[in-house]
Length: 422
Image (cartoon, rainbow, N blue to C red; front, side):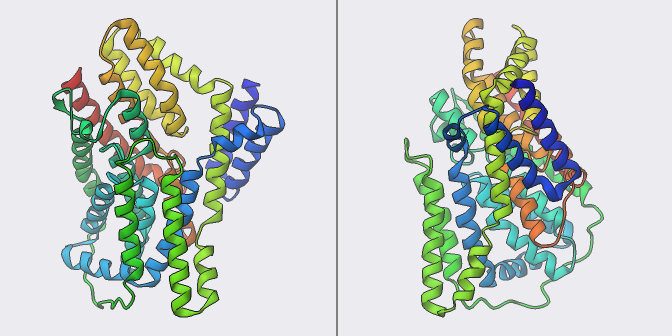
């Protein structure tokens, strides 16, 4: 059974890499094969799907539709263009802006909120939106580990290690992972200056957009504020964020219809809930659950730990860089969930504090998703947004940005955590 699962997993990624038009078919077919072969039960498959993320994407996409329709992204683009000297600086500012938001809001929601602003800027300047959109995605993935509320894996670690919101800033009297992430983010600025050095064309807002409907902006700001507010409540249902996004979307639809009485506008908003991206994520959740069910992820985890032995520096190094490699292809949520108890057992056997390995795991698992376009939900979402705008992003094209970004941020974070906790 394990051989079948591994084979299907490899075939799925081969199709995703070389035949991108069929990536949804590959994910759903692999998931179907797992169910037919009895890798898992139907109930287990349904439970493995992260409905919170799917609801959050659907709801936020609808909100973003109205946000774009209000012309607010164009207005923000005007402001940003006035503050920037050239296109390269615009890309850097947008990346840092998305990273800041992602420290407090889920990565996927961040991409859905910020990417439309980047698209509006690129339309004004008649340039490809690919570099900016991908930079927004990888920046949001990086900053997700900065705070307790920035990413699901941060919440998982906090729950396991008894950390609260302040622990990400100061833990055991030492600087927390927030500083490792922020230093990594700052280190990526020179990298972006090199990557986008040819984007020197001057920018300016030749026409200033007038925003006549501020309600979508208020709704989007309200969504962000609500997500931050509820994040401080412990033991809330897993589907909370998704329910909030859907609620805001429904309210927006009702308000817009009541004001315009135009059913076509409602249909257009519903269509913006990108079905292809949702189906891809649906299939991937089941496939990863299959890998977990037959023990493949556990085998990978055990291999990392066995190789490290009792040498803490070697073990820490393997945890960080091994996690980066694995998370480039495997969703980091089941991986982190599997590794936390493994690391707890290893450190208990060695009689050492697990903090170093815990933070190394979070650093590696979070950043690893930036290596490939399918390594994180935010990346998949960004590629989906570009596809809807007529831009097809290949693996190679994504990795030109993702690899140097990841290696730089990971190296800085890796060194910082070892220097403070090693």
